[in-house]
Length: 168
Image (cartoon, rainbow, N blue to C red):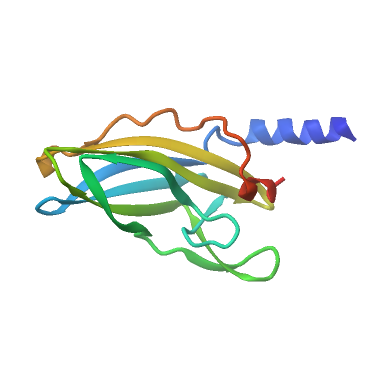
């Protein structure tokens, strides 16, 4: 039995990309000292991920630190999820192919730095993988030159969180 479980885990690891949701940050100047940081997540073919408000596996921007600015409101979804019926027969909203998140930031100095981690859970046919993407975004005093820094390593080991346990 243990051999079958290990084989299943090894087969899943070999068949899936190392990261099922790949994130790209960008910065837009809304007006004056107000900026929008946009995270575009490309979801691997055949997989889906969840909304910011999903009851069990919400995508989340966490461990946030900001210097030289302040967060305006909460993170929000820019694109619209697809309404589906989940494996339990309940209505659900999933993102396939792409998820786009935004966070508004007011720069209070010459420039701001926004860093944190995006948690997402990518699933297919009842198999899910929790992923963490660490980011650090610099927001300059010139909107034309505002750009995202090179992201920190996309996936890092973490202690299991309670929401990860229901996937096992």
